[in-house]
Image 1 (spheres, rainbow, N blue to C red):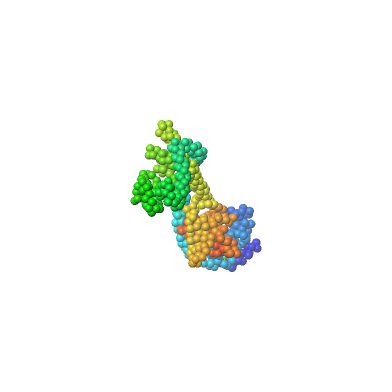
Image 2 (tube, rainbow, N blue to C red):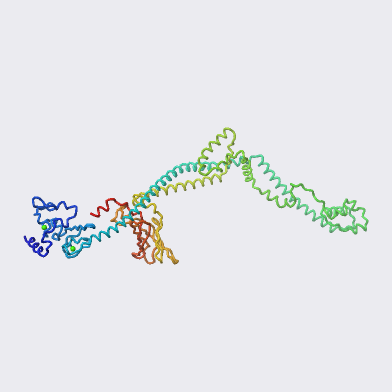
Length: 549
Ligand SMILES: [Ca+2]
Ligand SMILES: [Ca+2]
C-alpha cells in the first residue's frame, strides 16, 4: 500500500508521529465516543460506508470517503480539525491547515502542528478572554435589569392605554348622546324661536311700548313743524318791528310790535317818539314792567322731565331703541329671579358631571312642570346659545375620539416585533433623544422620531431623517436580536448635489442609552454607533459552561 509506505516515510521524519498519533486527535467532543478501539479490530467510517482497520485512523492516509478516518491530519480534503484549546474555547479549522507549519490563531494550544512547533498560549488567552467576557457579562446583566424595567414599563403602558381606550369608549357614548340631545335642542330652538318671538310680541307691555314710541315720533314730527312756523312768524314780526312807521300811531301795529319784543326778549325801538307823542298807551297799560323787558321768566321743570337740551340730544337715541332686543332682555330679566335658580344649576357643576346632570335635568323639569312649579317657558328659546352649546359638545366629542384613536395606535405598536419589540422593550425609549458632540456638530437622534445635525457654532440645523425601520437587511428576521441592532432614519434634508440625508443607528447592549461615534459612510449617509440596555438580553445560565467546554 503506497500511501502506507509514504506515511511510513513521513513518520521517519517526525519522531512524534513515529510513536503514532492519538486516535482522538482533532475529534470534536460530540464525536469522541465514536473513536474508541473496536473489539473486532475493524472500525466503521462515520458515514457507515466502509470498514477499515483501527490502525488506519489518523495514519495520515485518507481511507474513508467522508474523511472521518483522519480527524487529526490533513490527509483527507474538505474535512475539519478540532483543536481542544484547553484553558480556552475549542475551535474547528479546515484540516488543510493541519501540519502546514503555520500556527493557527484559532488553535491556541498549537495542536494543529507537531509538538514543539507552536506554543500553547491557551492559558493566557483564556484568562484574558474570561476577563473580557466577565466584564461583558456584567454589562449585560446590568443592562438586562434595565431592559426588564423597560418591559415592565411597556406592560404598565399597555394597561394604561387599554384603560384609556375603555374610558374613552364610554365617554364617547355619553358625549354622542349629549351631541344628539343638543342638536335636537338647537334644531327645535331655532324653529321655536320665531313662533316664540311672535307670541312675546303680543305682550300688552310690548304693544304699549311700541305705541308710546309711535306717539313720541309723531309728537317729535309735529314739534318740528311748529318750530318752523314759529321761526317764520318771528321773521315776519321782525320785519314789521324794524319797518313800521310809529308816526301813524296805529295802535294795532304798535301793540303787535311791543308784544313781539317782549316775547322774543328784544329791546323796544321807537321809545323817543312814544315819549314825545305822550302816547296814551304806557308800559303799564301794555302790562310790561320796565325791568322785566330784558329777561324772560325761568320755566319750572320737574326733575324727571327732560330739559330742552336733553330732548334735542336724547330723543332720537331713545326712538332708535331696538324694541325686540329689549323684549328679549325683559324676558331674561323676568326669568331670572332667585326662585328659578334651579335652572342655572349647570353653572355650579364641575364639567365632568354635566352630562349626567343634563340627563336628569330634563326629567326634573318635566316633573316640576307636572307639579306646576316651572313653566315650559322657563328656558326661553335662544337659538344662538343652543347652537354654540352643540358646537362645543361636538368639539369635545371629536377630541375624545382622537384620544381613543391615538391610544389604540400606540397600543397596537407596543408588543409588535416591528414596532417596540415582542416584549415591548423599546416603548420606554420612544422619543428619548441621544446626543453626541463632535466639536463642530452635535448629532441628535430622538428614537423612533427624528435625527438631526446641529452646528455648534451657529448655522443651519439639518434634518437627517425620520425613523423608518429596524434593520432592513433581508438576512435578518423581524424579532431576531440582530434585527434590533440597527435603526434606519431616512428622508432627511436633501444634500446639495446629493441624496437625501439619512442615518443608520448601530446599537449594541450597554448599560446606557448613548451614541459613541459618528461616521459619514457615503455622502450624507451617516452611521452612528451607540448602546442601549434594550438590547441586553437576560444571561442564559448555561452560556458560560457551554463556552468553557
Ligand atoms: Ca487513514
Ligand atoms: Ca497550521
